[in-house]
Length: 539
Image (cartoon, rainbow, N blue to C red; front, top):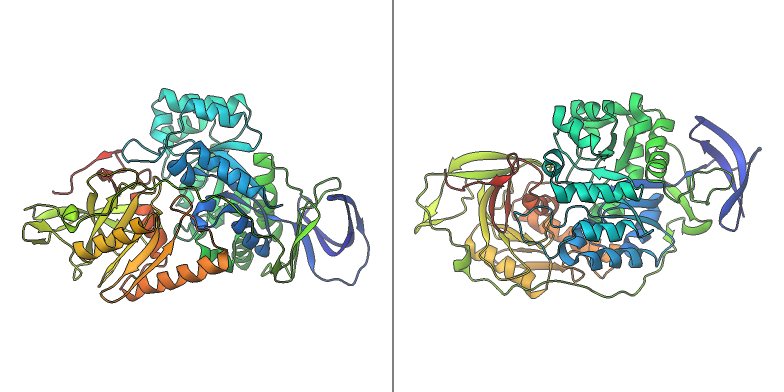
């Protein structure tokens, strides 16, 4: 097989007319010669950090869409399913991914559960990390979110890091806002990347201290604008990732979108492609070709170097996407789950109080970080309740693994004027998380998810919609087009109920993410993420 066109030589910053000969899935030769074809041939895109589960698709269905955008590989942390199902969940992701030619590279989740301040469905301790690290299908130790454990020499955390070093596998970081001496110690423990930088100065310090900085642009967390200015000087130590990508967004684009935006900002196209294609392969030692003789033929043909519209995608020389058609087929799989809580009563959401002031989570659109606000309480019949006029709404996190009293808090900026929304995608432990204008509405939304053993939903006074997620309560058994359309309808309903957030369900899922400052809610209570301890709702 021969491919002809403008060949992109990224390391040498060169473009030339030529012909690539592919035999037995590998590149046999690359010759510089005249040809009529004006399209561009380059290595496939690699997402340097993603949780496939956040697309609400199993890996085989994710692959079917990703190749349409020129993505041939991902560095995938199965942290989400691991918090529900443990090692069995990791194995499910690996085996499902193997149903396709797409190059998934799964890591061993380092923080399951993410913290001791929430209820998860499983534990992956250092002994389990040892077993996973020995598995050749596990390529790295995934994001070490417990940076306090690293800084203060937690024995179990250090054992996990040592097993990664023993097997000579990279260690991913996760340390939003970490600076100074604490950052230096974190890096000295062997942690080599961070995708959580949210300011230019933070990213620069991490680069100067030897870290690889991954520019993240997902459905909720968006750091491209803050960090892209670092690419000019530091392109050899930067990568692109989506981290979390909801299905409707994935249908529209992937890493190709970041390339388009970077080039539109005047960034050198070779530096952009170095970050998008080359650096992840080199850093994680991936079995992904880079358009060299002898490499696997993992390459894409794009229309131009401006919009990066993908015309064809090849993996190991196999044509997996061709002019609008994905050739990756649907595979059968078991629908594993872990959902054991009973339906709730409205009284379970009641919170007796006489407080005048309460702590309120301020949700920041497009960010994982939140602020802590002190606001006036609204009390009816001795019960703390939502106030739609001030946009301070009651929020609940319900343990889905056993029957326990819900965690109750309040949140600002969700903007609902009617009804409630809820999700069993609640990072990191994936308990049920709900926000609503009344206890009745919240209870109704929560019970709708319990009936479906997982999903996302919206309810109003006259309507209810649910997208079922029967795989671990976080993924669908449907294809991307189906789940994308369902999700889009649900997103629109949440906005009709009053939400002004760009991605209300993605934002909702992160309001229980305790490892990101500053104020969050777990099933066990309100949590101060800056000081890593519980705090009181009442002031």
